[in-house]
Image (cartoon, rainbow, N blue to C red; front, side, top):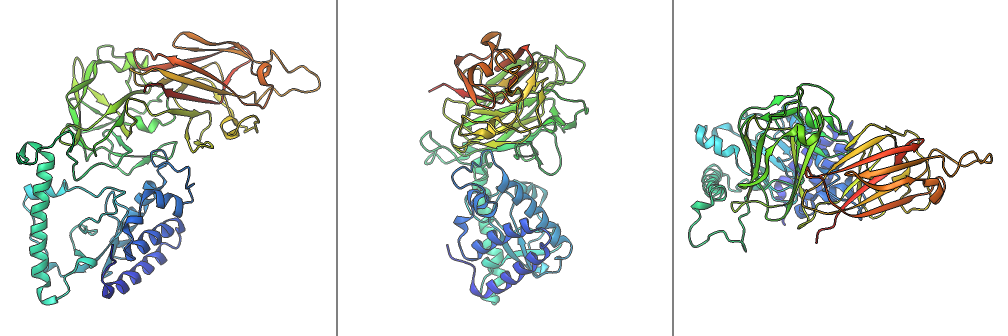
Length: 528
């Protein structure tokens, strides 16, 4: 890709250095901006990817980085985009050149303010509404978007690299080209949104599925009914407002009561309720859908509603309290093998039954055909990456028990960091899975507290406990010390586990002598 015209490079680089100086107190954002801008100015847009940002700017491992679980690039780009907007609304408001990061793109735009008299007249409400729906670029494509107005329409901005060279024809060329491009773009968007309008000579087929121009970047995590800046969860992933995809009544802030079985209660601060739907544009492929619910007291046993995806039932006669075993308990439903409909959109519909349908959050992940993405949980407050590059999420889905606060060094494993801490006591986990699967469960243990000494008062029999899954015994009177001693890793693997009818693996850690313990839990779908 060629860089911008040489006569505009000096203006762009001068503005870049000015903005970098303004970001001197935030070297993290300054480093990111320099990385993005230098590559763009050199015509290397194709090198501006999430992977490159994570590994070259923020030092993530080039062999272990996984964008589906590590959102560092997206979070920091969001912060930079917001800071640039603030800058050009304040100290940079009179600059002749504006640097911006288009929404959901990593490729920066260099734009120049022009005479407002050369701009288009105000659009009609209908056209303005359609313009709000114009698709952003895919985050990883490196493609550019039309320039945006960072000053709320006060000044017109035109991209420097697209300014017509002969000034005598500049205004006329800009108007004609923009109108033609907008007309073609509108027609393309309408056909993408309404495939029935496609000509008979080019019908969408299974071999050539429709790809909407404004496909959502996946992983996509939405907070139902929330208005505001993205929030970051305990694993570092960010969750945004659902406004861009939502159709229905307004959202509500949920009563601030504690929510059990979650390490991220902020997922349940807001909700949608009533009859509502989502139309989410996705690239062709297989995805995994997670829906998050919570029921509020009083426990309403009559609150039944339905959920469909592309017209097919996901949940029928669903009652949150029944599923979660009570109000104020986080409830997560998992669905594998989710794909967009023929028009390239995932259509989710929530329909009230005997009571209003509700939703707190939803998540769409890159999927595995016929298999659920592995679940890996470590009994620690922060995520851990193992030697194979797998991300283990912070402790979640638990009830009762205590998280240890003193890390220990453990032998007998290539991943001692997984065993540094533990959840101990009498506790349970309720891990959500797709109800259609059969699963392998791997439990990771180490004796971290009872360390043998010369008195021989600590040893075999010091800690004994049992583990049950969905009512069946997995481990009976299990003694870690008897098997491997103290400060040594041991795993126990169980295959062909069938989930409950609610799609849960309900684990109970039941102490016999002293407390039960676990350091990490892994769930793997056995489907082919």
